[in-house]
Image (cartoon, rainbow, N blue to C red; front, side, top):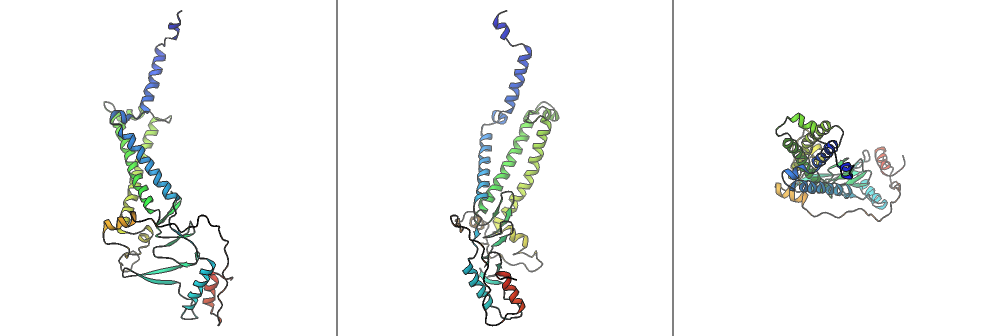
Length: 311
């Protein structure tokens, strides 16, 4: 028998080869061949932009304020003790500053041993005071504050576009495949990387559908915050609204213009980091109890001991 007749593929081999080839072609960019080559290019650009914003949000200092040194904390404690008007109550732990005609209270942080600047809050997860604290995001593993909020906003906004783009591509792909046939049969015949094509396709549709609404809702909420020059922490606490039951006060940080607020939040100069990345971690040192001529009352003594002394 000639060698050509032995190597010549039969009907079964031809059918198997054609099936494999059809699966391989189906896994290729179907929409790029049917519609335009710009679809995978746009998807790749959106994906890399989302990942870039995610990494910048995760690894950028959100605006952590260094804790007060022993000398600074002792001097501040002495200043607080001298402002006490009565020995029957502890000295005040707040200060008031005027910002754009609005009185703003500065609270004392017992952990960092300093008065927190305006819009600064202590994160219970990171255990640090963060400037313009928005919230602690577990999905990025970092606080969202003054120095990385623009990256976080770009991340959720681009992620919403990417999710909507993927969902539209999935629907368009199934629509083009189902021309001239039943939609359910198209789902069953749609190839996928998993052994159950129908389950994989439906799962992809469901995930994209619910992700769109959640991510779009989050993007819309933060767009409102940017336009109003607010933070999530201020909006939840109702710092400049009537959520607490009192009278609504004017936001002193708003520039009374949506465009100006967006430029101030997203396009302003990035402040330098205050973290000494090359420094050494100093061990926690207990502050000595402040020396006073007269014996303090129980309330003042308990307050001083809570900051630096022994009980």
